[in-house]
Amino acid sequence: MGWGLVAPALLWTAAFFVLPFAAMVALSFAHMEGREVVRGFDPGNYIRIFTDWTMLKALINSLEITVVVTVVSVVLAYPLAAIIAFRVPARWQRLALLLAVLPFWTSYVVRSYAWLLVLGQNGVVNKALLSLGLITEPLEIAATRTATVIGFVHFFVMLLTLTIYANLIQLSPNYARAAADLGAGRWQTFRHVILPLTLPGVVTGAFLTFVLCIGDYITPQILGGNAELTLPQLIMLQLGRSGNFPLASALSVVLMAVVTLAYFASSRWLRLDRV
Amino acid sequence: MRALSWAYLAVAYAFVFLPVVVLVAFSFQDGRLPVPPFQGFTLDWYGRVLGERDLMEALVNSALVAAVSSLIALILGFLAAHALARVRLPGSVLMRGVLIAPMTVSYLIIALGLLTLFNQAGVRLSLWTAGVGHVVINLPLCFAITYAAMGDQQRNAERAARDLGAPEWKVLALVSAPMLAAPLAAAFFLSVTFSWDEFIIAFLLTRFDVTLPVEIWSMLRSGISPATNAVGSLVFLVSVTLVILLEVFVFRRAK
Image (cartoon, rainbow over all chains, first blue to last red; front, side, top):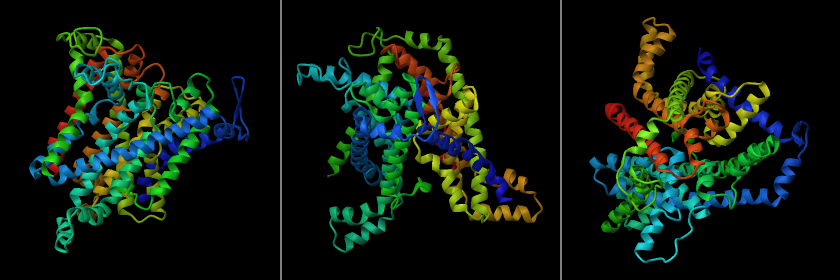
């Protein structure tokens, strides 16, 4: 009986997730001759990724951006979630949280575009700073890594505030009380009681941030411009301009390997079934 | 310390809302560029956008793909969660892992894998192929939400129904599903919002008929314009309405 119910979902996942992934891995060992895909077992694509500087640089860019975004987002979101959980009166908390993540519901493509309007040469930030006399020349933020990072941090601060808040609110106030009774100051209570108890939630959120950030094409493409490429941008370039599916597949396998490494690095604290 | 908290909250809200405020404000721009100075208030861009056939078709396509793919993901996820939460099957930990796995994979990789598969199998790209991809990303979500919501209370009610002679499909349809109405609705609406907003899978797996995010993407190619602001504001309005409805009718009631 149980098998019959679980089978459709398993078959779907096998047919449209496991099988495509296997097909992609197989394709990554093919190579191009002219515009023809020649199948075989050729590690050339992987060798190229780790020896061709443009490819390696894209991988490094992606890793740097993702690590910065993950760390900054956690550091900004934790206090926000804590303030909502511990400072805002209980009856306003749900509203405060809903407001803090409301822009989450704008279209993803549109959100990056909106940041372009904010950060652009003639954008709101530059116009405001110019009229305040803080700068004399418009800052060049759009089409740089800074813009990409700002766009990402905006999105992930909202996501992490949600997950960290959910963790904080589940903590019994007795833990903090017990720590206070034992003479712990506020910082000590946070450092030795609250933080360790919320660590699984934080790591789970950080892992999701890492996965979503490193695989995203939209934000770096709209905000970062083409001055430096991230891995997803490079993959899309291979698909579009040169139609090099084998190389795009190999790059995707590398991307997948990076995510898997991140998974193992954080698996001790991960609680993916309790997001 | 207290004042510092409120200051931090204020700055955080300002940061979070900045792009949305700019987006909506300049959708009313009476001029060709959605950047300062503000040249006056007009609704022209909304009129123009609503009159654009490609956009409206894309909007209908998106709604269709979101509704159908979320429904399929919900049904598959619910059935699997029911089976794995109730019956002890050999390898159930492994099966849970397999079902959750797509959650940890970048959408780009899922899209590229499906594109490879469809190309090799000679399947033509359409809204259907994008829908298949959206089921793949939403199935783990629907599974996880309904799996987490299943408790002993349901188990007892189901057992009672079975003892009274209900066949298994009746237990599922008349006891389990209604008792899980709130989490099922939450899973469905979350899936709809994810699918509705998803770009890379829809971009790589559709060809002639496209979804709204893909259409907006092609609008961006021709540079910034208050028309894009207007579309973005409309999408925001629809999503926020959905979220508020969900909050009021599903989560309030669940309490």
